Image 1 (tube, rainbow, N blue to C red):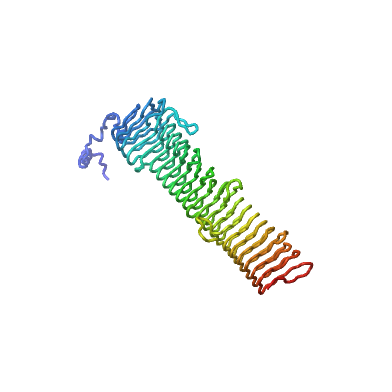
Image 2: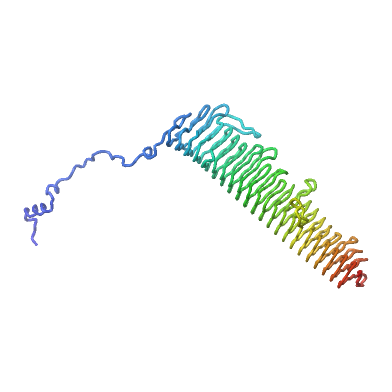
Length: 532
């Protein structure tokens, strides 16, 4: 190959053909920068223009975003008044306070405008509470007013004379806020989420929808929380005169209520706990209750409709009261000095339930199935159709009743039941089918007008205690150890067996007997003795 560098003219012609100037290859440009770099992004103020509120009182009269940069205090009246729609007020973590000698004015007053958001800060007054009386300096109201679509989030309010946060129901939302000491309402809005309101007068929280919140009221006829739907919340009321409610709702779910009158008062309660310390209210009152617990009052749980899987506990009144009780447990520890008719469980219909009462009926129903009733001083399970305005009934099936001093079961009709008593009748019924009655020291193991396929036992040592006592007995067995008594005693006995091993006793005593076996063991002698 030829060496082109030996021919300068050839190199120049080649560079010109490529459009390059030879001088550009030999000289560099200036190295000094033209000036400081210019901004290429918008500022926060340009992106979201905000207006600083540097002092109070202040009136917002135009839409926009407003903020605080330090704590602000008024000596009287309102701190901030909002007189425009479309406003965002960011307290920016700072506090609005008042030094008014007597509580007056609003920390934030919203006139009748809409689309307003208030967030991220504190409102502080000097009002305190003592014995249910609210007095002191500062603000009368925290945040108050507005029209539609008002939102308050992450704000604390303390020490106000009347309302902590009070917004209209028109699409208002209060979330993640706390109110401490408000003489009237803590929080009032359409929707309240993840909020707390303590040491409030008439109401802690009142809203259409309440979730994950806590509310406390202190005055008569007050309520901790009130709402249409209340979920995962706690309401308490500590007012005098036994007139208030812990939590009231159309529907309450996973809630706790403590009140001087009713712990929880709801149309429907699911997985709730209600407690009252009064004797004339209810631990939990609902039309329907599912998986709930109630303590105290006239009844631990009271349902006008159905109680499902509920537990009612009481030391004064009823444990559970319901039109229909399914899979429920009722306990009444009321003594004779408390009241007269307190039962463990009191219902029109009871299925798979347990009831205990120290002084009165363990279970008192119109009809019972697969139930267990127990009482110390009265009847274990009582079914005579006298519940709920005297509606007829009185049927007991597949159930057990026990009493120490009275009847184990007392009913109009008993089927496949077991009744036991220490000092009273084991089972007493107008009609008994496939039943077992046992007494340790009472006058009859089983007592019935008509007994079919039944077994009655008496282990009494006193005289005249029959194993089974009936007007008509069919295919029945009676056994007694009582002197001068009968294993089975009936006006008519058919296909029956009776035995009594005590002195002077008869196996079967009957006016008419057919296909029966009567036996007595006395000094080693077994004999039949009954009238045909």
